[in-house]
Length: 343
Image 1 (cartoon, rainbow, N blue to C red):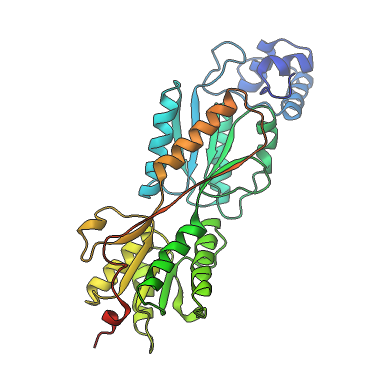
Image 2: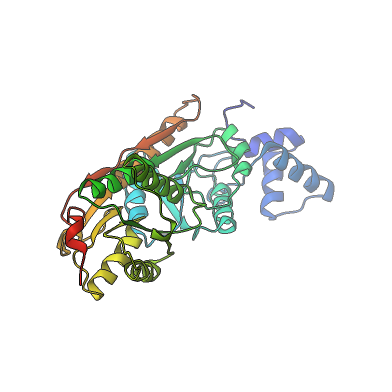
């Protein structure tokens, strides 16, 4: 069997020295087979790294599937929705159909989903890695020719292509923008501890911008929030400090929504805000929300295009593609520091 080809039912049959029909009978448990034959077939399946094609049991032996498996953390997050749409649009041009599931950032759930996709013998596997997940189990599949792409974050235990945003540079630019408008007390509302790659990179960008401006890092200005409600509570905590921040940097779009909600509730309209990730209706807010925008459509296209290139035979070294962010100036991040001192 060629090193760059995924093992088929026929390969398993040759390894054991039986017919493909016998192998199918063992795997599908739809006919008689001796215990010895069953044991030999299962051993060959494990040795070759073969995954039964659940979608094509009655199609010719070794027939390829025409689907792309995508694992994302949260289907409700508009960022990943936009990424998925771009992947689907690009894959559809090649006659591929998208299958998608949510891991909830749980490594066990992620593994279960990838196993299901592999059992369907997807043509491409794209995964947003969960914190703590080990992807070494995908080595044999990638070696056998399955394009495996990590999206938004690098994976662990597997050298393969990754498509990420310029998280650190984007956060740096957003905080530097606040500093340029006179702010030196800048709060960071995000998710800690920063085990997740994107959160870690954005906090690093925040710290780098402060350091370049000669502003000491103040741990009391860095808060821990996991959802919109937590971001609102964190904002309230920061505004209640004896020396409160005059500006806030949101670690992602969910944090931004919590910040905006708390500022409206507390009538603190003059606290400057820059968000990492754009949000819907950002221009409808008062003031309109300044954001470091990712490009989810380009991230999705890059992931699909890279995977299709691998599917077409590209065997070059694994690479990381970084998609730039851009700062969208709308008003909330341009308020001067002096205007935030409220009675």
